[in-house]
Image 1 (tube, one colour):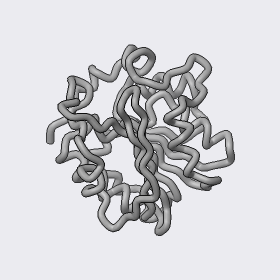
Image 2 (cartoon, rainbow, N blue to C red):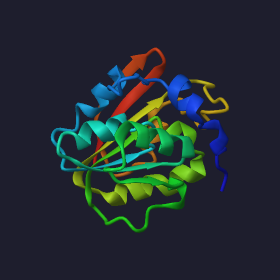
Image 3 (cartoon, rainbow, N blue to C red):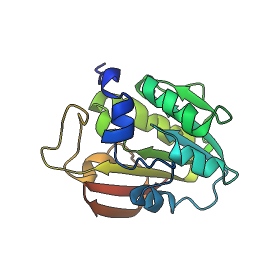
Image 4 (tube, helix red, strand yellow):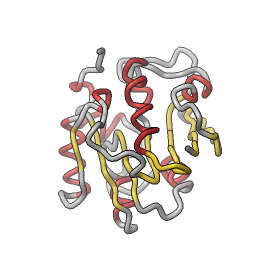
Length: 191
């Protein structure tokens, strides 16, 4: 299975290239909008957690958060920003998450993740997300939607939200919000 090189996701990426970084670890406007749909959840899985702002935000609000990222640099930055008191795993999610309990999480967050995965990886990850989220739970997605938008870092930018929704069958679209600099959308799905 193809994978984007981990070397691309270094500290420079997380601290300078990746949008949303703030030196104080606060949430960016897209993150705030995306997370506003999760009303007092007790369990969250944050897939592609990066620097850890989202994990820290929910953990500080009495939520059990399980955080996963593929990048070694993300692991180091996560630990610096969040500490070691929150569950974190460095893992390639395209290998699946078979050890996690079915329908355990109220919310799954995929913020700036899907565009970094090839279709064959999405074909593994998305059914896992559906398996892990409780009935009536939420799947919160933030991703760019661009025509010809792939780059070294974004290997699989979709041209339409329908291309993303096909990976999440039997879910209900609660909301789609657009952001124009850069062109991103928040997709809120209910299982």
